[in-house]
Length: 249
Image (cartoon, rainbow, N blue to C red; front, side):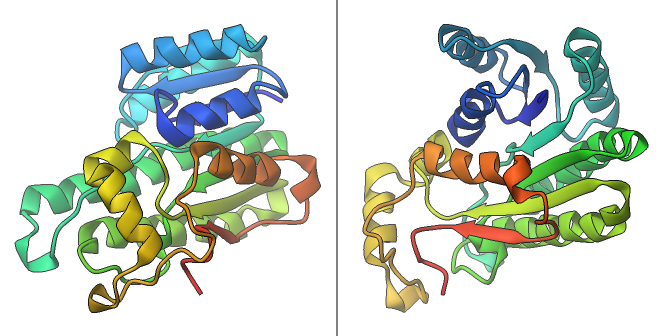
């Protein structure tokens, strides 16, 4: 299996790349060139094979060039794990226009750009699987995450709609929706204090806690992605798999 992983420089993307490298070559894609070097070294140290591609997920030409380069190097891309995204936090009334635009550009437009580019190739070959990393904030409203949640909800919908449209072509598309996860994004959102608050919950903010008592590790999300891309999930498409320790009920 040849996998293409966006957001591969850190967090969930890096963990996913390491996991998928157990099944075959992996193409690592991210804006962070230094982070790609670190992930490529980790893949190599684990006995895997990787190529690296610096790209902007909102740039269709960048995405197409990276896919072309990956396929020239290692053959057709069979699996896509789209893990790239940005976090925008704050009350809706206080969110600057620039933050709304950035959330939509990366989390929605970037998702559609990468997903459609890869899915067209897969559909032409009659096989393939893709997983989009969304968020449990895309499943319903979260106080203080209006722009982020809206962008992720839209990404969920676009991904599942494409899954239905391509179901007859042999291409499967699903969404994994993580909750709070120990990544650089979580650190930027408030680090350990925010993680502890997520576990406990806050009814004044209409936020349940996490029944399993901890936030996720990136590897927890990578495992769900690995399953949905594998033959074990051959009859699963157009689904959202929420991986948040029970925080969404």
